[in-house]
Image (cartoon, rainbow, N blue to C red; front, side):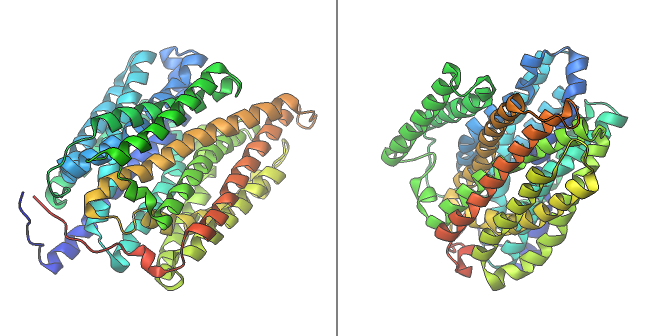
Length: 485
């Protein structure tokens, strides 16, 4: 392997912003895919004859494949080449999306979603690793990660809007097919703009670690997904316990491995570990809160799919407006204040939803103020969070750290949704509300889900207080040469 001298500063500076655009497109399709199908699911179920029991697998198949294979995808990117892995992941994701848009049976749709998850596990960590090695340090890095974080946060809400538009005016199938043109543009652009990079030295994949962590993550995600059967279910307890045991075994295997899939040094840094924990919480809140917000808008307030998607858009717009302002402030105030205040503000917005929504209420009074407040708080979290999660990561470990970052959001979302669903079901079953007729118990359930999301988000503040240091230098990784070719 040869070490290639870096390109002139002007060329590198001009090309790397195009790299950011390409990576942002990749992140957009991955994030969109988490919510855009949710809006389309009722129509897809009716069209393909899916049962209520099998319907959940359209979501679960993607989550299982994505969560279980992320760490492997990150290490493949490090060893095989980040650009190559990125392009292969894009090609596969686009092909799986096209297949999903053309399926004729429910089983084929579930298979397509699983294939999307497999290739997303290659694509997502490779994209973030490309960003990490392209923007090594300084103000440009802060800007790049702020953009990436804003897309991660806003993409889920954008997915609701786009899913509503496509489902209502075209077909649910276009909620999958829409990925194809985006992927084609990103593939062509990446071939010319992105530079290849990989971890230096001779590398081998950790086969034992790969099997153990994939089985552990899959068991954990599946166990929490089945929590709707009850937390005392033998299936739920068994799979969660198996997942936790396998992940504990994975740590032991990695400590003893000469070529670990996830080097423990990636997790050992206090700041990075704190950012990973916050990502776990944010993932749980974003997926759970947005899902129950959609239910409230459509079932209680009577909004159609498009109207419900548009109604969730103010939070996204606030994130997009606040992110550039907070990016400019980040080098001045440092990441710690934002990581403490942001969760408190976002939690306040969720508390507003939990305490204000009623069966006979209005969107403008009960929902909109909460979305605006949540947008401000989430922007404060997203701007520094992704940067801190990859701070001071050596180029050799960029893919593994990126995969861990993505895995935290995915696993957090699966766990949070399972917990919120269980609390929601309990609140509905025990509700004595007579306001709004049959809608009253549903609103009680949504309120409990929003309250649980608020508590989870508020917990991110003390985690940041104790684990995120106040130094601005935490935004800048240790400089190290990147080997290309």
